[in-house]
Length: 296
Image (cartoon, rainbow, N blue to C red; front, side):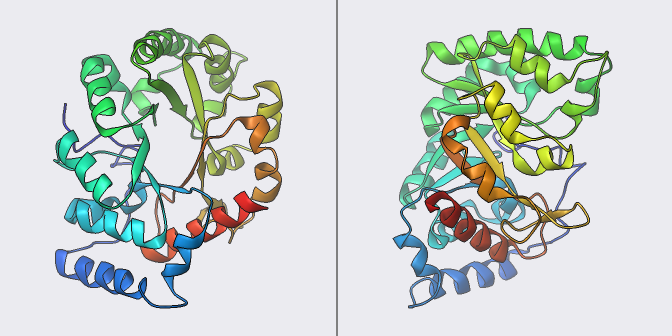
């Protein structure tokens, strides 16, 4: 299995415009990490009690240059958990060592669907070695989505198989949504088919709150219909034009959603922003906002 290209979105469809060469990256990360040692700066983050996670896809350009330096930056901001989006040519053993060295854990991993089909045993072995508890199907390509609702019914059948294999070794399968799962097919919503046809004991849901808003769906309605099913959240905001925004700076009513966290069953709250012009600001703002929301 290629440990470089397991991630949440198709890189040809969603790429950051920022280009980070090694010199610029080291200057940026060094300045931030140094600042974290000073009063009144990032150091405040370590005093926060809430565990907040970060989807490393947000920092994929940095990760491509230096995984150790990126993880050091993430830890300096205050994060204790990360969600992986590939391992950038590092072995599971190497990646786990780098996580441990920064006091980070990786409860979940994004693993593209074709890898479940082609190398399920290796997906499971990698997850166990790194310490993942959830392996998440993050995205379906246009080809994988096909047409008609039967595509999702077949996917649900396969997810029951993947989920059973994961359950046998103490892992759990999960599914991450975008907005296309809410486009009606043959009178049904694909997202509803996955919830109904996949055994709840075999697959959790990673609800992306931005994409729910984009699809004009109500998370609370889903929490009510399927309590306890939404073990992971992706948290990114939306600006008034419908584009990505840093958490807490947009129009999504996170306070109301977070008030129903227990009903949702959420265990891991993961900050993400697919594209941003200021990576460090984005992950700082996300950490602060989610920490505050979790305490409210």
